[in-house]
Image 1 (spheres, one colour):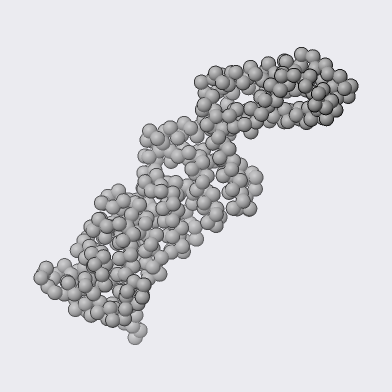
Image 2 (cartoon, rainbow, N blue to C red):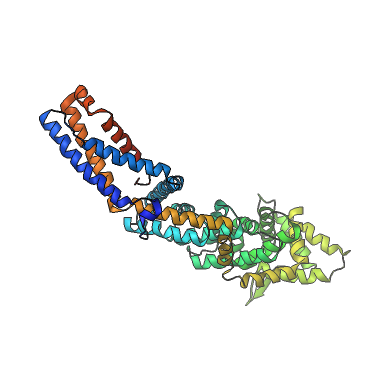
Length: 437
């Protein structure tokens, strides 16, 4: 955290104030030890002096216009500390130094996207729990996706994890960013939003990848279906899965795809002079599914709208939802190709979009909050404050010995001044006080 002028920030000279408190604490410790040794109660004016000093600090903080902001920042620092501890438990390979660096970096990274540091650290924690070694990079990508795509953290994380697993990317932030860039660029130029594409890819990505459909092809296919039908990403993902199973002649009891149904679909494709299979070097195998879609789109476009072969093909795919999705891509294949190009041109789009959001009114306020929380954290970590808190804790230990020596009746003589002192000690040790650590 950067060095700051605490007098300017708080309206008082904190180091000077706590230094005086430290001096008074030492005086009181000596006096109390004398009481313990002699059994006599003669605290002199020291108790009154240190009590007056602490009460003065208390009063200044109460009347300072920044008091409420300091209180909020202290609460946020507690949350950040808790998040860092949880990150450390999820990834035991991180040292205290590593965790400290993650905490320090969180402010700058969150500022980049107009979010609060605790938001970013929450994503680092989730990525760590998922098992990502590069949790910080995955977390930043999630925050960028949330901002650019106006999606929830849950959906962004689901999209990233599902796509990573489906296409076996090994947690590569670079490759995942390329996929999110492409999706975002498609969303920016068509009647489809990033959330629907994310939801769709989370459902269809695994099967698409297993059947040889690349990420850009799956995204563009979903985008075309969603934009044309205006149905949800989840619905079109299920439809795409069913279409791909038909194209690859794979039965699926849960989806209601039977051997008889597959034969009917293949016959409908053959009627359009489009084969699902090819023979190379004497070996017959199923063709690439998106190549079949391309050929079907070409032949479908040549048919008169009254041609029964159109209806036969759509009916053979299995249900109305799949028929709508298949019709959408066959009749709008040019849109699919346009989306493929937009996907390819999307490099850097998600970062640019997220930065725009960071410049919004809310993003600017979050950056201001981060700077303030970072500053208050710097004060809390200062050696002077740490010394003061440790000194007060030490003083409590001395008082415990005194009360043991004098008994309850003897300690009553310490009076309201000492009671007031330790009432303020408790205050200094709570998040309400800016000296809290």
